Image 1 (tube, helix red, strand yellow):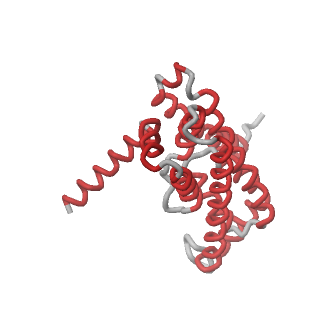
Image 2 (cartoon, one colour):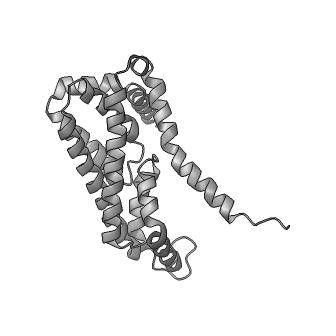
Image 3 (tube, rainbow, N blue to C red):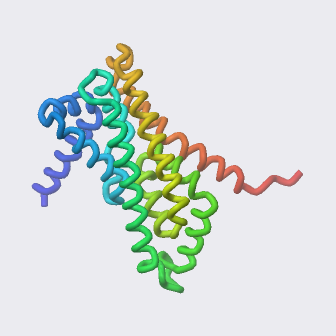
Length: 226
């Protein structure tokens, strides 16, 4: 047990080191694997959005780092954007499909505290009304973007509606973050403070969800008596 804990800790330290120094590690991947790097990046973005068990992969920071290396000429910007958009859209679609398959099988109890059929109906109503906004905003929020399409599937959000917002959100996310790295990542002040920039990107990524949460709390709060 102690050995397993030690190995798990070493993995977490390594993962954190990779996350904090994506510029160096991505450069090593490009140097070692060449054209196969496109497939590796495709799979990472696909898994980060498509597998509900992998919500901690570095989505936003990785896209920014990818943009930096595109700006340096190590990756083709047009091919990269196309592949990453495809990975993001396919990932959310798979996640939605898994949720839609599992929803009716899990949420079919009438008296369960957690898996009550009533909750499934409420989730469906929510996503039919607010699903589009949720899918797009979730793209820019780490962890949430992994669960949003799954929950949309569980709630049986109309697939045509989901797909439209899935494509819009996926393309917007990939283009905004990757092109930010492409155009600004090689500016000396950004390049020399890459770790701080990455942490800033993570903070900015969380902001939309935080703002939406505060707006919801404010609107739900009872109005004080005049």
